[in-house]
Length: 197
Image (tube, rainbow, N blue to C red):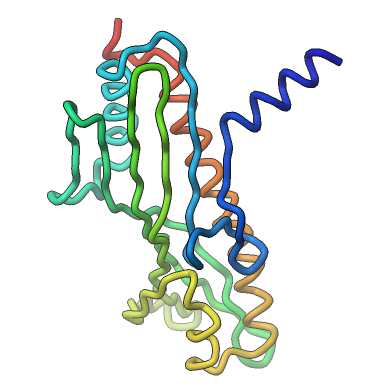
């Protein structure tokens, strides 16, 4: 019983979300996608946590890290915008489908202090890239939209109910990917990196 209580308390201390949600899927703050996790790592100095966060960010996002990233060791702040690929099978007319090779854009912020770190994922957006299997053609349709504007986007693009349902299923996958990112970042901050040996 004590172990179960300890595990529950640990889970609550690691993962804290804002009170409201978006589409009953994404945690939100002020109507925008917002993930916020506090990682408690007792007796680890901020400089060491910063190194762990920096090694994790560079090793996982190096190909997409922009020049405008923030890596402020003295202030204990790492912030960058990046993306990861997460394709979606998009329903089309007459029961056919095509693959939308979507990129999920995010802003990730990591704040470190002695003994703890805060990891935030915000500014989530989707960029669509349709693949047409009949022609083998892949095109960037130029659509990049913030997750919180999906209702407006679906009305403007006149999406059918079937397409909206497929997007909601896809959003659940995106949510799972965001939770995995938070877990990976938390684990990287909790574990000794190769740079520390």
